[in-house]
Every structure is written in C-alpha cells, then in structure tokens.
Amino acid sequence: AKGGAAKDASGGNLASPTATPAAALAALPSPVGGTHREASAGKPAAYRKFEAVLLQSFVESMLPKDSELFGDKESSGVYRSMMAEQLADQISRAGGIGIAKSLEAKHPAETNTPITPMKPA
Image (cartoon, rainbow, N blue to C red):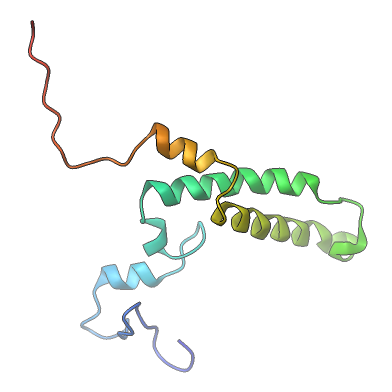
C-alpha cells in the first residue's frame, strides 16, 4: 500500500499484531506470478499456468528475432520474452488452446469422499 503498511485482501493492516500469517502470505507476490492466494486456488489454476508456460514458448518462437520492434540488440531478448509471457498469459486466461481443459478432464478435482476398498470375490 502506498505511504503505509501493506494491506490484506480485506483491507486489514498486515503489519498489525492481529494479522494472521496466512493473510500475510496470501497477499505476498508469488514467485510464479500472481499472489500466493491465486497460486493455491487449486488444480485448474495450475493447469492454466502450465498452459501459459507452454504457450509462452510457442509465442516467443513466432516473434521476430532480428527486428528493431523490441529495441536494441542488448535488450530485445528481454522485451521479446516479456511480450511473449504477457501474450501467452492472456491467451491462457481467454480459454487457451485446450491444454488446461484436457488436463482438468483427465485429472478431475479430488473430493473428500473416502475410497472404499474392493471386497474379494
């Protein structure tokens, strides 16, 4: 938060003694993008991020390598990579190319229903 202590999603002060560690962690940026709250959203979010990483590789390979579009030679690789990352993330958020949906269909969300062992015949 600008000019003050960091706030959690509900607007609470993360530096206060009443802030929970979970709230503080959830509001921190995640190393894989977004926040820890988004990163722990479950399998569908992980599948979407996986699809975005694959799409980033595809998109980056399609972007021009020898172009002044991304600036001088020293910085063009960085800007190309950043553009590919953002394009891939937006494509993935818009529904992607079906990788995340396919993974989710093959590995549905786990339920809390206990598995009963089969009885011998």
